[in-house]
Image (cartoon, rainbow, N blue to C red; front, top):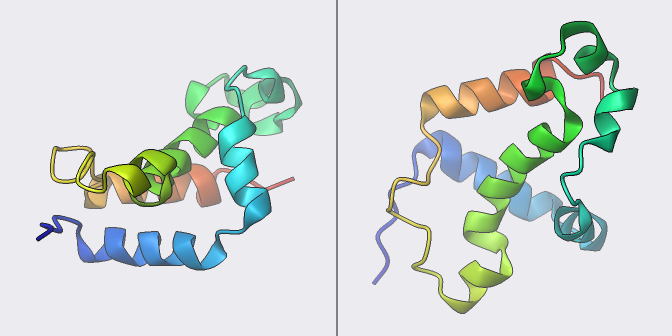
Length: 107
């Protein structure tokens, strides 16, 4: 028996990620080393110097949500990481949406 503590928005986002998950996206999540070199080429970060604008930070936020339900650890021990406060509430999802889609041109 699993206890699903995800909000409706979080469930929708998880379903969306699962539908878009392919080999390339999975490989990107596993290979990004979070070094921050991409920050030099991001014009939003260059203009604001806000760490939340660094592409690696943005990817990490999505990676956290992805990893809770689709990562290899979640496949081995599905109960790990669920129901322990690691979920995204409505405010977190709104902030994630703003950082990823509102403040990014996906150049």
